[in-house]
Image 1 (tube, rainbow, N blue to C red):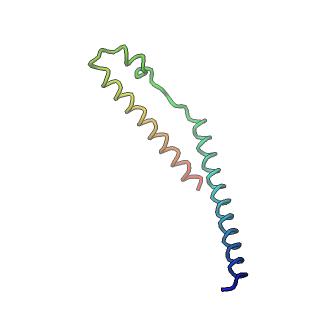
Image 2 (cartoon, rainbow, N blue to C red):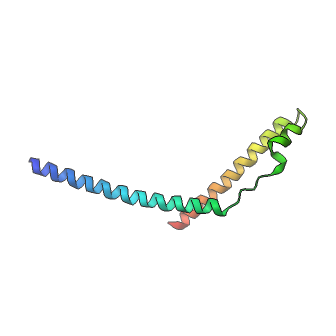
Image 3 (cartoon, one colour):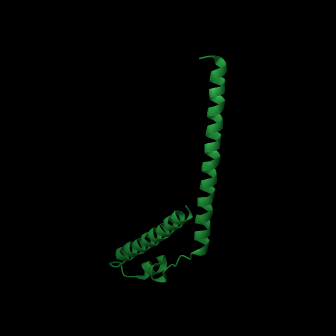
Length: 93
């Protein structure tokens, strides 16, 4: 293979990679915009029953359960929010 063929092949490869990067970046920006709009539109409801102050005011025997309940509630809220984001991304495509 001659040197000019290698140079042309390298230039074509770089152009293809640049195009792929631009398209991928544009898609990522669209997804990020959807997620930002989703986060600003949805309000995360925090329950006052499971705040740190209320956990500390409970008897020592109930504190570990209250901490687990608080963590479980937060995990469930995060999972619901993630499912909503996935649904919105799926709609956008």
